[in-house]
Image 1: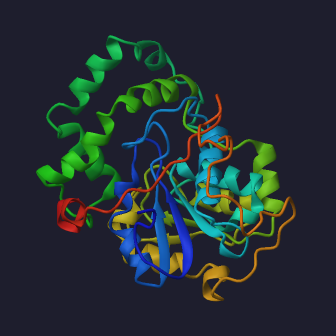
Image 2: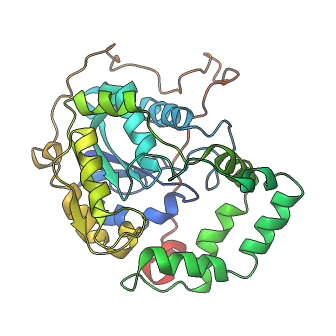
Amino acid sequence: MPVAWGTAGTPVVLIPGAFETADTFALLSPALAADHHRVYAIDLTGTGYSVPSPPFSAGHLAEQIIAFLTAEHLTGPDAAVLVGHSAGAADVGIAAVRDREAVRGVVFLDGDATGLPGGGPGILGALLVNPFRTTLLRLALGDGSLIRSVYSSQCGPTCPALSAAGVNTWRWPLEQPGFGAEIAYTARNGITAMTSAQFAALRADPVPKMVVVGANDPQMSHADATATASAIGAPPPVYVPGRHLTMIASPRQVAAVINRLPVLILGGGQVKTRRRAIPATAPARCPGKSSSGQRAQGEPACPRPRQVNRQRLGGSQM
């Protein structure tokens, strides 16, 4: 079933950040759906339970988002609001620049769409080749203590404590075959980021934009948030309680802020196009596929959202 939460209303598509999955939106998604939105959360290839499809560059991931929007007919009058968390901000920003008629609005959530300070991955990139990669991943994920530590530092005291099931919600996707390739690529090339030209294009685009940040985010200062909003042509940033995982720390507050995006306040409406028009009868298939449904070599796969397992992803388990 392609719709993860909600059955009617303006579509909202949630894109996770580096080493995250659609599961990280388990609390935010129902909060948005309660405000009469159709909410989709997808695992891009190489993350979660999706099949790896390198390269894991921002442009490649943005094409997967566009492929998903096209396959689900979320274009033109039914275009979606894209919400990118952390490194996912770059993916949604590039997708908006590349295919305007598929995007109704853009939200950067705890993300500035830039690379890590210094830019260079250093010696870690050289170490993350097998057999070192497999050994390091097994050691890091072994007893769950590293996951608990990172979760606690990035989420903050208002977040639900991680139960054993909650640890597995984070750990199991990282043990999938695609993750090793993705983390090796990231270690060598850095996290996904937008170029200066893409920032300029997004800033010039009239699509509504918003920057939402945790008030105590250790990865994104208030100065960075202000600069990001200016860089993409958004109003001043909006701060919500929490650190870097605000969709878990303050899901209702984040949902309320996203609902202040003008296109959601007004209930949607036609999206003005400035490129090719997508016919209303376009076939529900991903770009790059032949009429037989096979994906052409080198083309991005079309990710599909997974049905929510509320028992496993409930707030008490996160």
